[in-house]
Length: 369
Ligand SMILES: *Cc1c(COP(=O)(O)O)cnc(C)c1O
Image 1 (tube, rainbow, N blue to C red):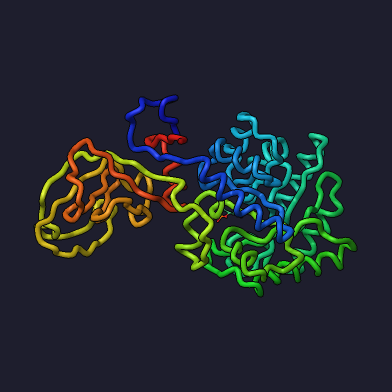
Image 2 (cartoon, rainbow, N blue to C red; image 1 turned 90 degrees about the vertical axis):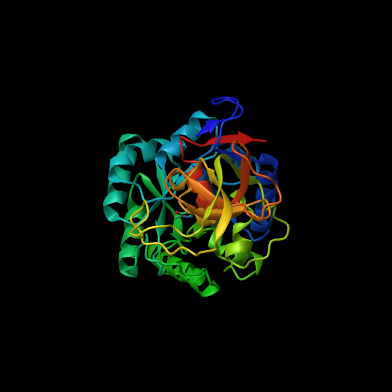
């Protein structure tokens, strides 16, 4: 991602604008509530492709770790002067173990082969690497499902000279859409007690999931033993928990991020395609509503940049996203009070999913305001 004014001309589009002060205020609201619940936060920066400006905000707000799924982002953050310890939250690849030992304070793990490789590499480098073992609770992505295998991995880690078993973690709401209910969160505590009975000591960290579990802090149902969370979405973008998870957070600022794209064509056209219909640019069969002839504009941005058109929320009344191909977005402007012309800029609010793609996109610039 490029920065407007630094890497590209001041009228470069498409661009994402970020109000850093709004992100800071949102982060502080989240951190205050986490702290009151006894939760240490691993601030997850993968949703903004590890933008150093955002990592700095998280660092200043009192997070305990900077976390992400990609080693490349962490290496860059160290170069950019972030000094918090790093947590790798995707299970490491065997091929990146040397980098993990070099650069990360702690990693999430769910595989014996990895634990052995981490221990061997840490021994070579004369380091002790911290490990959080992931427990599968039903979302069916990473983690030990068999509790006997979990206990065996915990015993191995506990005994390994160059590993330190920091604790256990769990994740939900990703592959399996499983909700972070208080019963689900309790499964992590139960697994921890099982492991503690075997290793004969208390675990320091129980790392309870992601943003989808933050409502358990707000409603006071987070089990008391869970003392850490890995939070990205809720701090980065103030609108997702209220919009998507029915969690009122009136103190959050909803519009810290915007997307701005440039109009390249304005025409009145029919709304239903004319001709024999087969598939769209992505090989999908589509359904089109016939709304007669309407005024519409074409924007120089597309699915390549944000993946999901429905994640763009126009800020102006009377504008509707009606479709997109890889490099074009089509908006209906029939009911827009503004007269939109070629060269004009149209603005959207964005959700986390769009931000994830936009910030990882060499065509899109970012502007910090
Ligand atoms: C992405 C991720 C998180 C953070 O998720 P958010 O929804 O951004 O809070 C936490 N843990 C793991 C393992 C992840 O992959």
